[in-house]
Structure formats: C-alpha cells, structure tokens
Length: 205
Image (cartoon, rainbow, N blue to C red):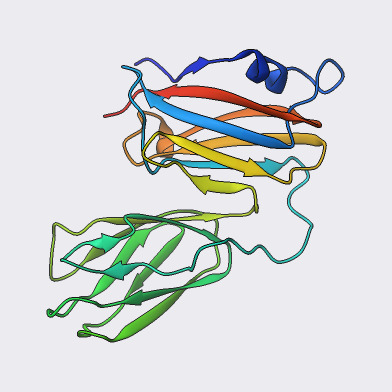
C-alpha cells in the first residue's frame, strides 16, 4: 500500500531541512490533496514542538461545540485542546444519544431533546470517533491536540498556522479516510523565521 506523497514547493523544501541548513516559516500554509490532486477538506494539521507545548492554556478561535443538526454532527470534525469540555447542543426535533468507544475517550450521553445541551470533557490527546445510539448514520470526530498550532483544512484543502517559535516540531496530518495507521501522516521539521507553504498528498480510502 502506497504511503502519502509529499509535493514540495521551494519554501517547503526549506521547511523539511535541518535547522542548521534552513529555517522553516513562522507562518505556514499547508495544502492537503488526495492522490489525484483534489483538495481534501477537514483534514487536521498539527505542529507540535518536540519538547512539548509549555506556553500555557491552549485556546482556539472557534467554540468547542459540535451540534446535532439535520440528524448529523455539525461540524463533522472538531479540533479541541486536550482537557477541553465540548458542548453537544441538540438542534433537531428528535432526541439524540452521543457516544464513543475510542481509546482516547469512552463515554455515553443519555437521550436528550431539542434545545438541550450536554457536555463532555476530553482529557486525552488523540482521535475520538462519535456516534448516536438512535441514528446509526451519524458520524463525527473530535481531534484532541496538545498544541496551539493546529487547524482544519478548508474547501481548498488549505490551512494556515502562525506564531511558531524557532525549533524542532512534529508535523501531523489526520483524516478519517487516510490510508495510514490511525489515519495519521507524521514527519519532523525545523521551524525558523519567515513564511512558506507546502503540499501533502494523502492516499484516501
């Protein structure tokens, strides 16, 4: 089975060189595409410092909430910091019961109805696959991260990460359909100053 294909721009080549040779950008654009070159939406891209994040509480620019609307999880993939409490508001006229059997979080929320909200904490980093005990077709994912440098690709397969200090990092790309263990592609990189971009092609199921 083929692994991910890394398509590098001139800037991206600098990103992947050791710090002693070249510096990666402190502002980075990453595009995720499939093996046909088509953009992959809702892939999670993370940059984690090799020594771990030590800069204090992690806060993102979006709410830690995943609604149930039109018998679906909205958004279908949510990125949150480790330890976050995620709200699950029910916007449907039917009742829902959210659950997960994932290693990172095992829980079950009893049935609740329209305009009611339940919350669940996620203390362990990793991927949490969600379902509904009442509606088997409902699927959602909470990606719990240990870094503030994380985001989700848009309709063009692009995410922009900013604010990284110089040093060694681990780049992780996750998607539920990626043909890799745990749906994850990983590689080390060195971060310096400046801006840059690179493209990663994933083979999807």
